[in-house]
Length: 297
Image (cartoon, rainbow, N blue to C red):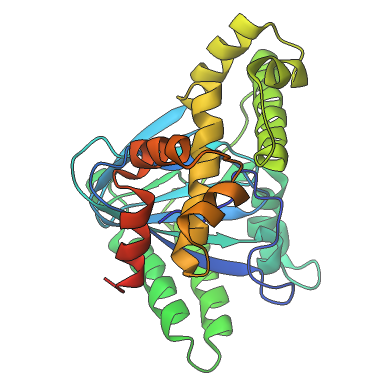
């Protein structure tokens, strides 16, 4: 199931290899497969099973099995499953500067520098149906395979594959220029939602009230509810419960927590209330969820 944090202010991988790949699986009936969040790394989302809709900032992409999305650092993104079928996707998260040259050379100046500076952008959608060359998606699949097997020097091959991916995007003329003027109102909304999401992440185990969340961004209760729903697709307290339930699910998957312990650790004091929200988001009871992952299926 879900393995991300919601404001991912944490390293992915280790300092000397800042890349990690997360496999995320959801059974049929789970609507929200990736809550809105952002991080300072680049991310490639590859859909291995099913169909899903992802939103990156204000753009929506309906993707199917074998297609991929590119999320740039700092971009808010979320994912939903609108079909009654299971979902499996991979998130390849890496620090963009890790690909940089140790010295200023032609590669850095002409190709990597513009991406790091935000003046050039990789295409958001990699799909054969929209003309993406097959080799680009093959590079993504090779990243998944090499990370899974982790053979000798896999780190070197993965860095090479990412550089090949970027090189071929340039070669095929798919790199996008980012010359759009800043939308000041949109930028302000973006900052506000990031602020409140960070606050929820930090205090999710505590008692949270609607007025308390609205005060974080100095908005009235009614306007905050409208603003939050517009930005995330969820009501504020629904999102708080979603955060808590995903934390509880993560604990239950470890096998080290029983249902009561997972509920308490996630900010719930009544198991019945916890179970109600767990079934709402996960389409099964906490006990069924724990048993499912304990079975190794």
